[in-house]
Length: 61
Image (cartoon, rainbow, N blue to C red; front, side):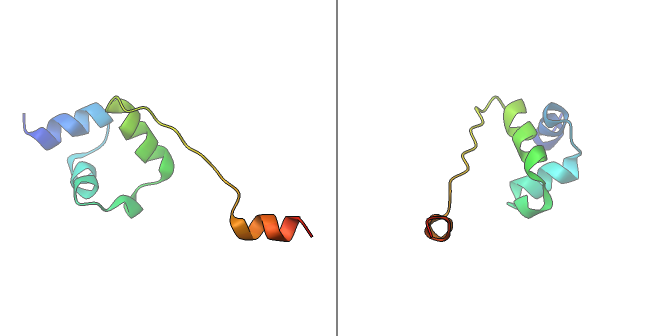
């Protein structure tokens, strides 16, 4: 089985989707899909949401 086919099966996506990912076209994927594929690859997922500098200036008024 070709590498892209193995990855597609592991990630639960089609081979063209794997090709898009390998070409860096992450804008074609939603965050949920990227997180699911990373988790399927055995990666630890950590998402941090931080307050923007401009927001703290506005909120402190």
